[in-house]
Amino acid sequence: MNETRHPLRLPGTAVLSALAMLFLYVPIIVLVVLSFNASDMTTIWTGFSLHWYAQALGNDTMLIAIGNSLTVAAAATILATAAATSAALGIARSGGRVRTAVEGLLGLPLLIPEIVTAVALLMLFVLVGVRLGLMSVILAHTVFCIPFAYYPIRSRLAALDPALGEAASDLYAPAWRRFMRIELPLLAPGIFAGALLAFISSLGDFVITYFVAGPGATTLPVYIYGMIRTGITPEVNALSTLLLLASVVVVAIVFRSGTTPANQTRGDKNS
Amino acid sequence: MSAIRTSPGLLTAPAALFLIVFMLVPVGLMLYVSTLERGAFGGVNWGQHTAIAYEKLLFERDLAGQIAFNSDYIAIILRSFRLAAITTAVTLALGIPTALYMASLTPRRAALMLFLVTVPFWTNLLVRNFAWILILRNGGPLDSALATTGLVTPPLDILYTPLATGIGLTYSFLPFMILPIYVALERIDRRLIEAAFDLGADRWRVLSRVVLPLAAPGIAAGAILVFVPCLGAYVSPELLGGGKSLMIGNLIQAQFGASRNWPFGAALALVLVLVLLVSLALLASVKRRERLAS
Image (cartoon, rainbow over all chains, first blue to last red; front, side):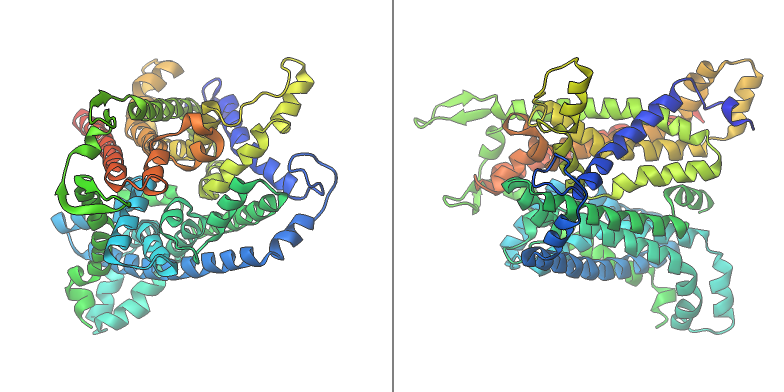
């Protein structure tokens, strides 16, 4: 089909989508450019410099915050991905009401506004006596990481031929071996994509962490928030650019793994 | 280890239990706390039930115990609704044409654009809002750019206004609008569009009579995915908005921070959840009508 005559190509859609993309990328470009600014003033360009990167990476408090972020993200990713993989296998094998109920439960963290999850968890932790610290942050992050890990795994599972697992069973593979030798390797791309999405969601979370982190559990976003509130130094630009880079790399990997939202829809159709 | 084959229940148990303990129970606890009496030094008095938290949404008690109508909180809730509605409208106006354009591209180009829309979506919310501080602040790039046109005299004083909050919200949630609409457009059977053309419909008629109705669930999903988080937004109003554009999210935070009024904070959070449930019910009815129509 001739692209310029495509039925969905209406006058103005090209212009409006160009505007939308401009709107999405101008702030990112401004941020990245200013992170290489030599000036002390955040918005006045005086020349190229890596000064603020050196400054940011030489800041001990910030390194601790990065360490906390990575610890929390790694722990929450492992917990959430394990639970989500297991749940995806279980849900694929159950039907009807159980399936609807568990899937509803898994989607809940995406539906409830973050601020509500944050204060609800804060109340739970305080009342039950969980000390606010890295542990409470890990538990809270696992909650909202589970759906991010679950959906790519489910779509991968939906695209699998169930005959493969059945063949393994017919050949007398015990359930555990069938899982390790057949299902796990075939699911691996979905599990990998889910784990990455969980990891980046945890790394980026601010609102929930802000509420449930104790004094010693400052993560990078909470630290950046503090810097923004107390007065902007160009160091924040450098840090933000590094976070941005991490997101781009992760999203690119997920896209290459083929578990994009568009593919997920295709998976839904087949299931 | 035959459990893996025989018991789906055991496989779903870890995730289900985790979400029950750390999602359902806390929300239930919130419901309960909203009916309790506020403790003298923060926290709550257990077993002391009262409707004061809900009453506080509309009325205030002065020192003599007189009850008077207080519109402060209603004003914040209405402002949140207004900002969320405007943001939803703007993202719809940008999102529908963008999704249409994406759906008209070759698969390779569409995939590239999907990637470009997804990157900001996964970029840290704080970072994205911070970038707008850089742009909107007096003496920032927007000021300088507009000054060179000679049409306006800087400073523009956009930062720390509801307009800045609106820009931040629109920016944060635009991908939430584009993605579901694009997915819905992708699913449309192209033969229906061709049939409409064959029957003599022009492009606008095909759009209004065939494409948009078929994409309605995606559009409705996008609208809810934007509206709901906007209503509970905390970061954009806090960083870009300043004191005069606080939203429900900031009010809730204040109750758990400085004010130490858990019951009132919990009541506000429940109002938010209630709005969400109503929105979802509306979405479900759109989908049901969709199913009946087809």
